[in-house]
Image (cartoon, rainbow, N blue to C red; front, side, top):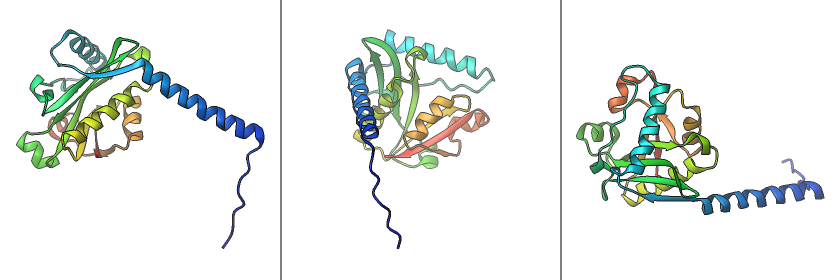
Length: 195
């Protein structure tokens, strides 16, 4: 058996490590102070504006017929069924995300019971990279657990590298296209995560 000697950090390295950890903690505190995430109804001007911005971005990225799936009904995110969240950065609405419990019999047969689907995830381009998307995702996962869901699924596009990276870092793994996304499998990536 080979023993490995403990690593000793030089004073400067230890300071750099300590400073880096302190800066990360400061960044997280600043994010918490600047970011507010709250449940809102789907049928309100803030939600409609964020969804319109998302739809515009997706339509430009995926102009192919049948590549976009914009449907989300208010009853799907009503209390007990799911949730629609709005993220505000320094008071300004900059992002959204939704969770709906899957109840359609065909999808329940395909994906299983106690499965929720994430939909309408969006962060305004000028504030991306601030941790807002991750914070929305964390909150949606928490809401999924509160609804008694065992698994989350989602669909994102092949041309959305940042979104794919976010989901993979959060523990989502690729699955076969499901439901309506089978028809757009050339531009869709479906992912799943056990809660």
